[in-house]
Image (cartoon, rainbow, N blue to C red; front, side, top):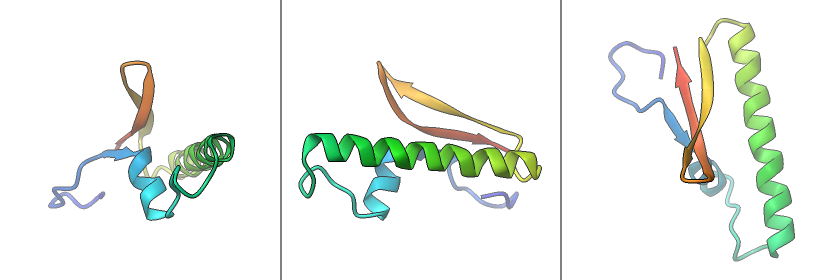
Length: 76
């Protein structure tokens, strides 16, 4: 993502992360899905905070669609 010639988006959706980890509502009850996705969001933010401290990224922020947090925007 950091390569100047890269055309990748700096927006990462949480749904995309869940799909990569093969986590879906179909396989879990509602409460288990909520707990697992909350834990993934927290871990993701921890990783990004670490990258920020290492100056790999400048900043990041969650973005919303209405009242729902949909993902993270990363700034280099």
